[in-house]
Length: 90
Image (cartoon, rainbow, N blue to C red; front, side, top):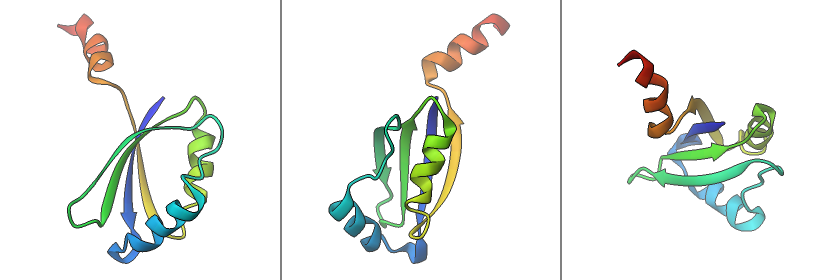
């Protein structure tokens, strides 16, 4: 399953997040895959695509960062998969 993860850095401050990332890495449990990410130009928010078979893996990863980041998680599908889901109704 794919997830769009919206990260809002506490106090709009990315420095503690990037510091931890530099020192400890992504801190993702085995089975959680990072796909890609984008950061807003003001460096206050990050949008990531993560993938895992079990949602609890994503929750475990979030627990390792929630002292620095507020998270919103949205399950998503690719555009190709969305088109396949809608195709029978066309």
